[in-house]
Image (tube, rainbow, N blue to C red; front, side):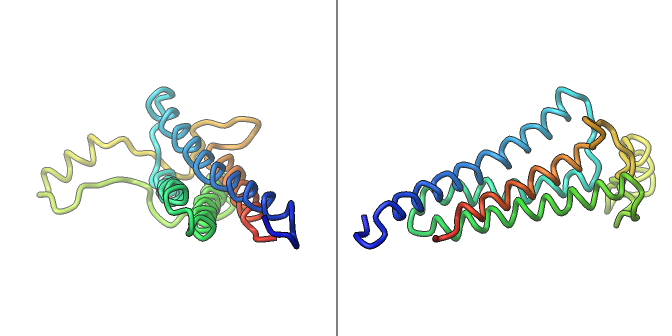
Length: 166
């Protein structure tokens, strides 16, 4: 404990520890929710839905690493928070595409590449087309993408605030 700051050192450490747990729990819960909506709820994710998952996977890894590498905990938690914010930004963009405020970046279909024309046609016909501009499920008027965006951006801000040194 620092004689000059006294309680602040303990408080800063406990804030960082809370930030670590949030950086691990929030993207983990959002990933589980996404997978649950897919497996249990029967929803098929579109391409932009999948884009939102990758930053959360990175955030979980960075947050877990922050517990192992205690000396690097703060920078790792900050990187995790930034990854969560990236997922949130993608979620907000996706929600805007769903609301038709702007166009998406892709056609949101999955097609096998490197296949023969016959295999390609079979793949296209067998692949369910999930459009990024259609809301599959909503709660309180917000789609899953919008909820991910809001929760992720709020959580990233909270984690960054908790991670500050003073």
